[in-house]
Image (cartoon, rainbow, N blue to C red; front, side, top):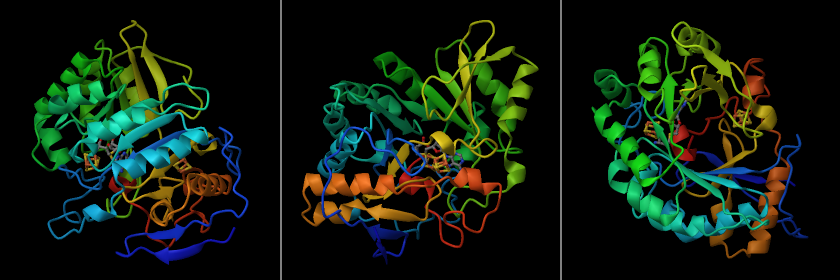
Length: 372
Ligand code: SAM
Ligand code: SF4
Ligand code: SF4
């Protein structure tokens, strides 16, 4: 199927208006891409705004007061998001993660959570419904999210040391407030809770051990993420990546760790447990150990563009179909067709510096726009 590639009105990213197959095939509950990977996991960005300015994601020099965020009318409404989510679920999506930007800045997010919590897979099961947040307003919102049907939560925290954390978020936000958010989330039952720490060598790698010490034995799973070359604004350099293998070796100088088997196909984290039985940690080796082979994730941007890879430079404009009066059957058929044509595997190609790698020569999409 040929796609017409048109620039967005604000020239932000290229997006194609998907063609609707003439003979719409109804979703069967399972659709594979060109590499045989099923569509299983949908990440939905509900806002491109954030109150933090983490240097690896929204560096302040770029995302300053002159930066134009999306106008409200561009955003998908909750009704539009829920409608698309239902069609994705009909194709086999069983897990939805709300993200951003900072998702808890989107007004009345619990209303969307309640809508998504009602969806059922073709087998009649509820979805695995979760959310990734910087935790800044979590203490205030955890209860309403839980009541609306959110099951669990992932909180990002890059340091336990307050000065380091304030530097990392570049908004002078205190670590104690995020920790209070995590505590409240645990109290209201939003578990199991995961905490994500992006590790930058020379910036916060001295926090690896203090973070491990803090969360060990708490029931919270700490996951260390390799600093990724996502987007085009963070000035990524390989020297600042701390490979997970080195991180595990460092931790093993203090704690005995044993590898665990993956709990689900397509899972991004390699799991390890403390030999003394005091819990587990994870490492996400997005740079040093590509996991494209099992990548079953689709991403829906704040304004309804479907991206098939975190490193894509082109989206598929589902909002154009929604607002163009297309039927559920037509939009579902378009989604199935797009997924069936997917062959993205950026991380595998990255090492080869291949000129045919997706996005080469074009501006890649930013993390805060499509979500992590
Ligand atoms: N604002 C929320 C938060 O920070 O949790 C949700 C959105 S944020 C884009 C999602 C995740 O992406 C966070 O855990 C963040 O640390 C991670 N992330 C952002 N930029 C990254 C990068 N360059 N490398 C690795 N992880 C990154
Ligand atoms: Fe905001 Fe999350 Fe990006 Fe940090 S990682 S700037 S908290 S969207
Ligand atoms: Fe999936 Fe793209 Fe990441 Fe590979 S690089 S794991 S295809 S999102």
